[in-house]
Length: 125
Image (cartoon, rainbow, N blue to C red; front, side, top):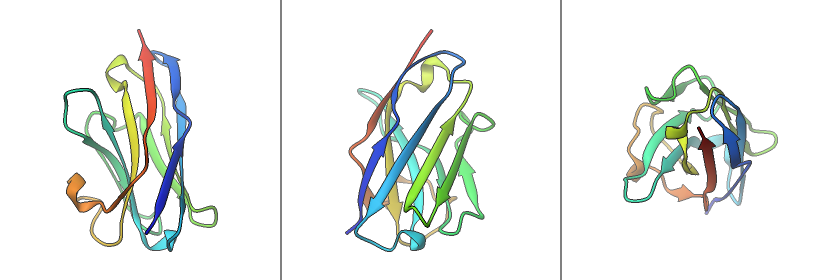
């Protein structure tokens, strides 16, 4: 069972940047597709981005394309989410997730097996 721990959330002004990190333990990190999701109160958890196990394939939600970048360092068991040009509508709890197999294009949250506890990102206008 993989354990995931996110960090790096916080309060930032619109137009600013944040970098989230997610450290994995308890599994073979390099074999997992890693994803980031986000959720606001009363809404479904939504896909943000995903990266393949060796980092050669990525996929982004249209709402973050061109502003967010996902990357991973398999030597450090860590996946990152660089968020630039942040907007108030990016405010949410951000979750890191992993799945053992499948495509980065399969964005359904039910395809992911393990989840972190989430980190709050708040973007002020």
